[in-house]
Image (cartoon, rainbow, N blue to C red):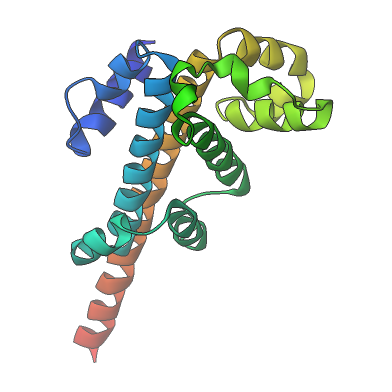
Length: 192
């Protein structure tokens, strides 16, 4: 657990979040958790796009995009794969359920699974279990399902950290690839 907490702390620090934002997020009530988690995801995606494009001047414009547009940008830049998109869509759906109805102040994660047919329920659980490997989802489905249903907040928190770490790594890799291209171009130009 220590490595996960260190990674969460490092990402939070680099994004200029309050100390231990991601760690203390777990102790929030369900409504606050889902709202703050979505705000974090939106900021993370904006930051990753800006980092991968190596253009801090566009940060204000990127941050003002709708989440669906940020997801399109991040997908085009190969910062998010399809399973990440599904995770973000389910997180947005949970946020919308919590944020767009004043009676939802008593939002609970158990509400996310009410009224779903078996296929919808499996799809939601799979997306929210972003931390689980394809092998886990295939070979240990009952365990993953039980974990997500018994402690949805903890499962989403693990998925949030997994998503953040992966996106952070991909953004840094994209930045290094862009710098490598610039360096190669300069070497070719200098060699002529």
